[in-house]
Image (cartoon, rainbow, N blue to C red):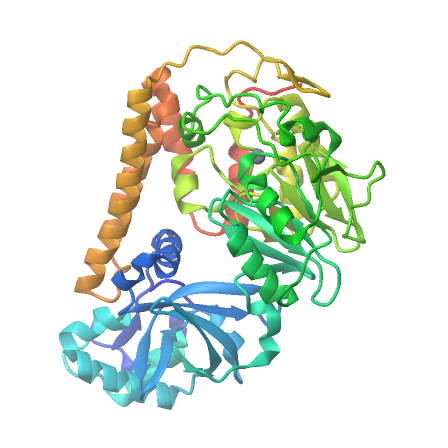
Length: 565
Ligand SMILES: [Zn+2]
């Protein structure tokens, strides 16, 4: 089941008289492989929010709640049940403890956002009765699969056996009563996720924007998403700051179209200026286009870059302003901007000294856009900026080192999930230490050069070995793979609720992933054999669970292929 995680006691705690002849408990919780959960959760998350939610509505919903310790908001796709007329979730995952004693919750149920209150039912006697009823309802054959348990006896388990399993695996029911609005959640239960006090992240598909400021006070929009995001951003801003709320300003980390796409529209709507670094201004006022993306650099983005628009962006000179020459950020007291060129000449990060919060823009990312699996699974991993659209790797590395030296406690990037915690600073330092430019590519040997009018000089374009037709085919394959992943889960789900207890699928998936990664477009131009083994071994390392620990390990093994001075 999505979101499930094992929480079992050591086997020594099993009472002897409840074991079967094979020395197994009569009833056991089955834990789906972590890798499957990690692949499945984002897909279900996406499906449940999309227009396709009807495909999974019958058995799944999204729950959103605030973590008691972290104060952060979490969204999880979960299996839905109705037990004794009450909506809820059967789970033994650690997140359930947030509902001990009751807590506000939001659910997206059949495509609609509803608020309510949830409480945790964990009394073993009550839970044993719930399970007994469900086993009876589903029948002995089906019950195991549909409840995520294994019944090792060929009769109805006794009440004691059920109590034993429930105590051992801490199986609980999170009961949700909808419609009981709980205002203690307040504005923060907008779609925006609070990543630090007064910093809310808007996940706008491929890119993040941030609303910075507290309700009732001045606030600022940092980055403005892709074109067409204005409505969504405005709606979230209203939820957070009240209807009719207007920011002090829009601040751009840089001007790429996925960060400035809705800036002009919102600036017009709100009547506020758009601030960017001086060196970024030529690219925002129609004076210059950004350097063309390099499709030869390899990886999924390089493929996509063949289809990226290359027009110069013009937000209108009257709107665009230069960031103040000092380091203060208009409308954001306590913050300062830091010039972090490389990805673009006028890229800035925003930094709050008080609690070490970093809005990193595209100086780095927390999703590995260089690998297909990294892109699809969106596993958290500190990664270099998007390779095809970064025209100065020397500067990019210096910027990453400067960022790492700040010792951030919260990292809120332009692409990927925010990261936080005591190990973050160490992870950033390790990343900076092992920072490597791509192996080859147009901007790797020599960077593009810029002046006050934008692009001044470009390295010559290397020949693109992949014809456009092949790139189109590749895109189609990528789309088909995503559809296939969704279909496999849909099919599995029709047969059984507990679609994740299949190791067979996990094996197929990783085999597929290795092949897919190793035959990525960028690699067609290179001797395929070397690439296959390098990529295959790299992608193996990504199958282990645990984002932080794993991030560190991957960083450590990300051997600097070609270091830039
Ligand atoms: Zn960018």
